Length: 171
Image (tube, rainbow, N blue to C red):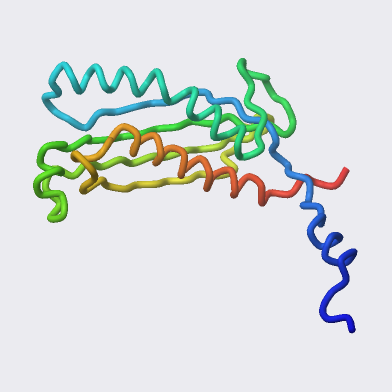
């Protein structure tokens, strides 16, 4: 007695091909990191430099995880390519206050990320993603900088979904 769909039909459904993507390559033209603190101490400035050094590798890995080939150098006007601009504004807040009163918003850290993809051939914007979040609490006040990198990853993931939805034109 057979019930449901055959194994071969299920296997065929599992292998349905996605429409070819128009954009398969990315080149990151700029990653701008802005600390929203009018009087940052040396530790915050050091943390900003560390973040600026870590973000390019994190961005590269996330884009590759999302199925895009990441160019090391500007490939020029190459079909199937996008140039990405990433901007992150952040205020890490106060970790000690988050630890003590984070449930009530004390010491919260905030991050705002904007990613823009521009067609490498036409120079026209093809997708933009904005993401913002705040860290209110966490064990020991939480790791704000890990949280900020995760916010960039979230924005890149959503942007990659938008790019993947743009079909490749028929030849």
